[in-house]
Image 1 (cartoon, one colour):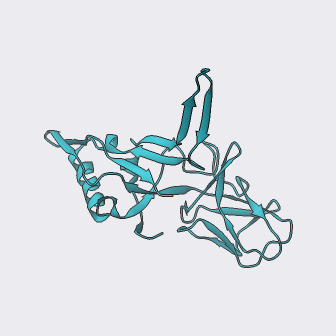
Image 2: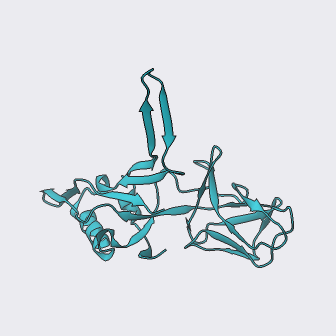
Image 3: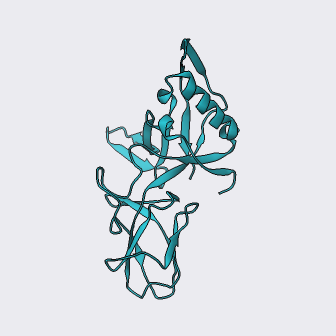
Length: 204
């Protein structure tokens, strides 16, 4: 991914983030009152507002430093969604059986990590280093593979056998950028500061 810094947005500035997945749906109301609906996007795109996490000058300065280092929207970065950042259900630990990854054919060695949302698959591009666990036909593998934290690819040293079921678990972040070229910070009292609004948008 060009124009991207492999650094993570500070977690303490992400905890107050407001947002989630967005879809683009075209809705036409016919003369009869019935609707015709069409999805203009194949998948969703996530947006957040992280301004709410800034409550003091220390956090405001930390946010400004991070913003300047990315040159505003010019460079993307990694963002950990406080609500959705794991292959496992909420409150449970990552396991090697969490998500279906693919079926071996005896020659293929590269598979894309993904997460299932009730039948809708989302490619995971930015797994967190050291969190990925892998199983083949129900047996967890502790070696013979590695996960790319930049592309979300699972790479095997030796191709899984034909028909082998590959599953994986992981924590992950999203590739995002700032939506705006400007931070609007406010100092309301001694030592207290906030940001009116600052959006992040997922890079697809």
